[in-house]
Amino acid sequence: MSDAALWAALADPHRRAIVALLLERPRSVGEITRECGLSQPGTSKHLKVLRDAGLVRVRQDAQRRVYALDPAPIAALDAWLAPYRTLWNESLDALGRRLDGAPDTTAPPAPKD
Image (cartoon, rainbow, N blue to C red; front, side):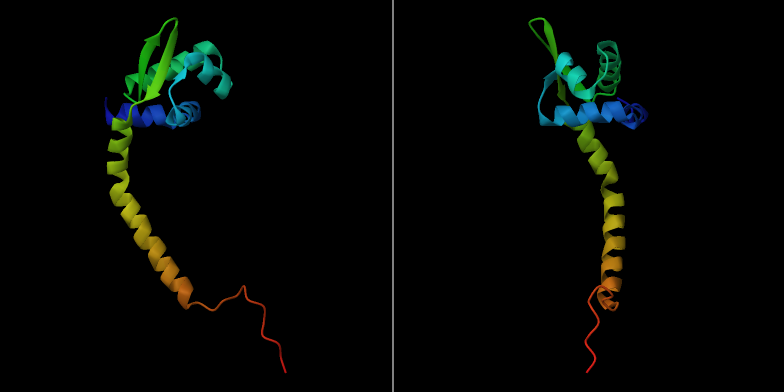
């Protein structure tokens, strides 16, 4: 699995929807097709991209193929995003400190005597 394949796989909104479904539980191709509103061939193509990127695993269950999310690539993405999350947290903390020192413009004006 390459980083480029992982990012490319997640770039498509249909594939992100499939990943979100598989986050809940493993599903058959038929379930994924119904839930995503895709054709069966379209769903299979998206699942192949996700499988090639290492994001999903497949197992045979009688006549059905059941897909499950593989957490390892997601953990790698999380590790890659960690420094950026820190950067955002620092920026949001600075914004919060600035807003804490600003006058409250949402409060109704004090009544005049």
